[in-house]
Image (cartoon, one colour):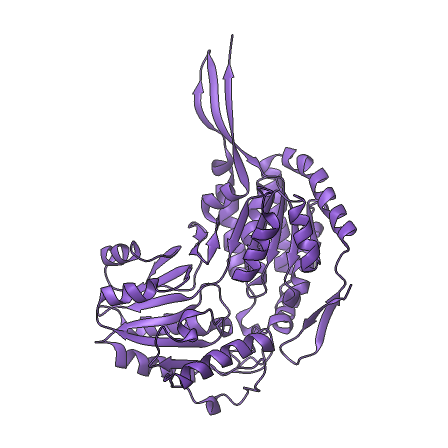
Length: 459
């Protein structure tokens, strides 16, 4: 068995390596989680909430080291301070709705009958987390799972090996029992073997479509519920009545932030013909104002991509599009830090079509294609011409228009005059090849619990 290596995108060195668990050791982890679950669920809800919030508070105390480690692991500039805003907001919201969401719903309570619906924890929740927002994506499931009375086994991406360790450290130091929340390093074969053996009662996976398909194959016939957030190619549509400056600022930030490595990042933009030229001009100026560089440099607004192989995907898509007639508007010479490896200059493409991979396949990097459209009908057709459906951003000054258009877009979330944002009060979900299931909101608790009906009769 080979060690799992974390290659830093900052300088290409091996930043960390860990040996994956053997199948026998992994089975023992799952067994301990199962054995600990009933006792954890038997604790009062307010105690579980307090311990989870204490774990997040302890994580906040580790901010300086966490932000530095994130830069080394996946390249995000330290100026952005990690993911604490979202981690704290999501934890607070999910904790605040837990009592109401998990409370039994009484149908009848009389001298003859007591009938009610309860929510019961699923058991052992297995989280397979991604590297791009490694704390946020874990928190989305970890917090409601623990609060609801489940135990959790976390497997983090090889690119962010240290994130799982820091989370486990924080929660254990705050008083969450070690068997209730365990962090593991596993290879693919062991992961699939555990799922196939019904070691877990729920699997939450965030990653590629191919990864989601592998999870589904492993779970086939086990009836284990799955939550899968997979690929995305999120569109933005700028209508004729849009606020142009606000649209440029938000959509380009949505396309470029975190080097474009956002699940709900903007990857394609459709602009009404009356605003198209002005939008493109302003978008190019916006991108040229970015500073690509070492993530530890306070001036850097764009760091390296997390891995050289991810950057190669984007470079290949850009090169193919240009060969097919697309026009690149950003001169790479403006970004001298581009080294042909993980450090990649951002790009804006026009003269693009849906015959090009860059407009149809997930890029997950700092590139966006912009197309001119003549009306809502053309924009809708193009937005829906995708195998994915996570979010769609519509720019208009009218709620009713946004709602009417949003009802026709095949997507999980409709934004009006926003993009690349998660509201913990709303369900985070997708359709088509983006996957299935949902996290956050009250439905996030439903994902990690099951309904249980009580029909009690007096004789």
